[in-house]
Structures are given as C-alpha cells and as structure tokens.
Image 1 (cartoon, rainbow, N blue to C red):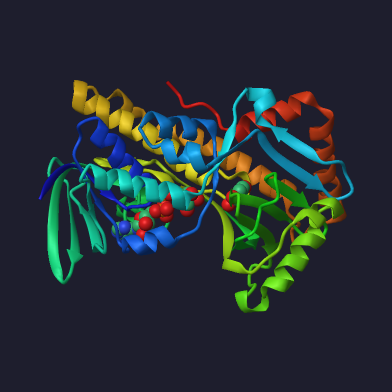
Image 2: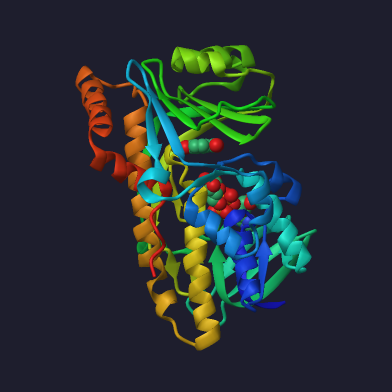
Length: 391
Ligand code: APR
Ligand code: PHB
C-alpha cells in the first residue's frame, strides 16, 4: 500500500490530522493498535479552549459540539478559607471555553472519517517505522497474523505517550524533560446533574475538582496517594472525601449517585525535543504530557495537529517547506507555555507530601496575589483560555 502520510495512532490527534489532511486533498492511512471500541471507551479530558473550538468548527466538526457542549466563561477556584475566585476568560480575553468530552470528539472524528471513507486500520500490532531519513520512508504492521507494509512520504507519530513513534528517534538526538508528581488523581463519572461551574478546590486534605460532560453527566476528581487502590475507594468514600474538600455551600449542591467509571491516574509533565526526525513528525501525547490541572492535554494535541496539517498542506500545495521546517520549534513554544501553566497550577492547587509551612504560606500568598491583582488575573485567564496559534 502507498499513502502520502502514514499516521500512527487513532486517538484525537491522529484522527483529526487525517480529517484535516483529507479536506486538503492529502491521502493518509491511520494505524491504531487497539479496536475502535476500546478507543471510544476511554474517558479523558473535557475542557476545550476557544482555539480548539474554532478549529473544530472550521473543519466541519462543530455541529454536535455546539449542540451538546456547554460553553462557559472560565473556571472557579475555591480556596479553603478564602473567597471564591473565578478565572474569567470571557472578561479578560472575550473568549468562551467549552465543556465537551474527548470521548464525544473521538466519536465525531470516527463518524467524519467513515463518512469520507477514511482509511483507519485498527488492531494493527507491532507497528514499526523504517528509513525515516530517506525518501523510502515506510511503516510495517501486523494484522490478523499477516505483515503489511505502507510506503509513504511522511509519518505522523500520534500514538500517545507509550507509542512507538517517539522511540523510533535515536536516543542521541532526543532530549526529554520530565517531572513526576508525588500523587495521582482519582476520578469518577456519574449520571447526576453536575455542579454548575468547573471548580478547582484547594484544601488541606488535598485537591478536588468538579467538572461536567452534559446536563446529566458529572465528572469529579480528588487528589490521592500515588499508591492508592481503587478497591479502597468505594463510591461512598469518594463522595465523602470530595465534599470534605469543597466549601460547605458547594458540598451541599453536589448531587451524588453511583459511579459509572472510576480510575486513578498519576500526574506527570513530560516534553520530548525535537518533535521531528527526518520524515517523522510527532504530535500530541506522543511528544508531551501535561498534568490535567490546566486541562491542556487535548488542546495541545489539537494545536500540534493544526501546525502539522498546515505544514503538510503547504508542502503538497506549493512545494514550500517553511512550516514543515519550523514545525518542531513552533509547536514546542506552545507546548512549553501550556507545560509551564499546568505545572504552575499543579503546584498551586495540590498538597505535597513534603510540604513545609513555608511552602503553604508561599502558595497562599500566590493565591492572594491572584485575587488582589488585575494583572495576575488577566495573565492566568489568558493562559487558561489558551494562547493563540502562531501565524
Ligand atoms: N501503534 C499504533 N497505535 C498506537 C501505538 C502503536 N504502537 N501505541 C499507541 N497507539 C494508539 C493508542 O491506542 C491511542 O489510541 O495511539 C493513540 C494515541 O491516542 P491518545 O493517547 O489519546 O493521544 P493523542 O491522540 O495525542 O491525544 C491527546 O489524549 O491523553 C489525552 O490528555 C491527552 O487529551 C489528550 C489527548
Ligand atoms: C475534565 O472535565 O475532565 C477536566 C476539567 C478540567 C481539568 C481537567 C479535567 O483541569
């Protein structure tokens, strides 16, 4: 088989890339390790920046999002013993954000690719990338016991943190930057009316977050020990702990119910540089991971795909390689911006096992500065809402 762009990974990054390339007349094949059912079962983030919303609309993926998503003007921070604070993206940037789950976006992407007969090969195992620095770049994979080969001009590595693409770059050429946090997030989904705002809570018992997917679907998180076990967290204990970390009026408003999903995820910041090796371009979680505190993971995958699709379109339509040549630098500038914000919010809103009283006071002072300074509020709102894409 031959294609112009072989895309490794059928998560949001890979599917969106194949969709946008197709709209620009560029052929691609998506190779996904898991079944479609498995990919669609994954529950992940749910807050979209305006840039993400506008891009999805511009490429014909806005219809259901605009119908079912919940536009909102920012997010709240409820700090123990302090007045509630609002990260007002609408006031400071004029932009609305959108609560719309990654699962729904992935469904929309699969529907759009199917409608255009997009080539998605799922259950493709043992994907390997070959000759990435030559004009004979190709990928091989196994499916139903047979080995297949796809020749291509370019490979897009959209296969997430544990994928094969980043590992195909020689270690001597790759620099990685990492921070692992000493706690995790325990999350639940429940079929209950959500708390009206997305609200981050800082409490001496630890961090908590109220979020939402739809008028009858709530998403909640609490900070947990790194070695916490799901079996130790029956629903009742979760709700109790969540409410203990929220202000009283908020706790009273939270509607509880049985969980339909419950999981624990560790928190990590990770960036790999560069995001290009010869004809291989990395996008999304394949190149970087942020802790979920700023809700940036999906938005970064989308901005990478915006830059990469623009670069490939320029190359195929005009022969110019300006955007391909600056892809890694440009994408990384935005990645580092979001990495820095996610790290900062994580440090601000969590209790760390080795915290001293000095750390606590400094954190509190940081929060007080936010509430006291219009400049600080504007800066946070601008970054939380998402920095614009570079021209
Ligand atoms: N071969 C083929 N496919 C692979 C391989 C492989 N060796 N390894 C991983 N994959 C697939 C995974 O099964 C997954 O479906 O690549 C896909 C990567 O998807 P995601 O992990 O969702 O990453 P991405 O598309 O970059 O989306 C980023 O996901 O984790 C969240 O916070 C993150 O919301 C952000 C979004
Ligand atoms: C979510 O809705 O899942 C969500 C919201 C905000 C975050 C992280 C996750 O910072």
